[in-house]
Image 1: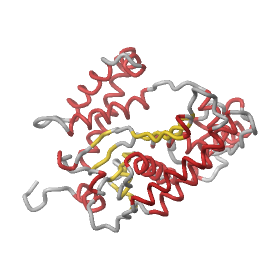
Image 2: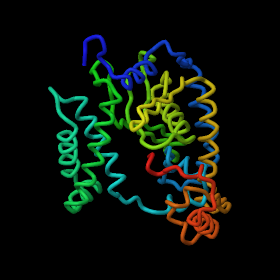
Image 3: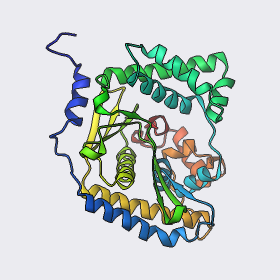
Image 4: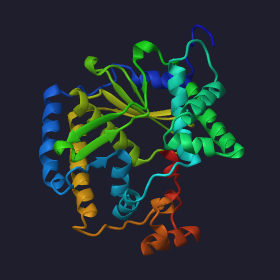
Length: 323
């Protein structure tokens, strides 16, 4: 690549959107403190119904499922997470990106993915056990998809420099109501330092844009703001297969709206878990991945109609692949 064009057009779009001077929000620290106090106060009544010693964990996926269909949230919350090749692919790819950001010298995506698989497989947790049990074909498929993801990342992002303070899959938590409610977020990538008011929160996606991608990032922004007392200046979703970036500044209005969504979500989750009311069923594309669909009359009817081609083509978007 020539010296006059150090970045590809896709990389330049990322730099242009994430750089300063793009209308960033700049939420005052006192506003963040007030929202943190508001969350504490408003979730307290619902948290009182959480059994002593237990905790309600609230994350972006749970809030999305709750918005889409309360019955699906109930089914997902009642089950136990199981690793699959598609879900492991994302973790492996993110680990490879993390290694690449800290690698001395150059390493191609294939080597980064192989190193990521090796390190994750050495772990004694559920993911390590899952990876060690994969067949040769399954491991090859996982490796293929992860390499494609990392390659697309490198095509869309300029090399991550140390002074940008890149953090891949960094965990953030906000503990409320003496530990009975925990807001938990793990964004794919953050750049910048909170103390400088310059942090950017990024999600990496493939597939078509969806409304809940915006909600996911706003939730991450609220959790990060409450954790450190300083709001990120910007959030963005990078669609790696399209080379497109969709972002927005983090403003007071964004954090206030997200606070309302989180409070409503906590109240609804507690009501459903304690049996104080029945879950509302909303059929739609998410029925295809809902564990309760076989026993759900509305979900089964929606899937049958969908298989018969009776739904509008606009319903066809790969909701779960985007995660």
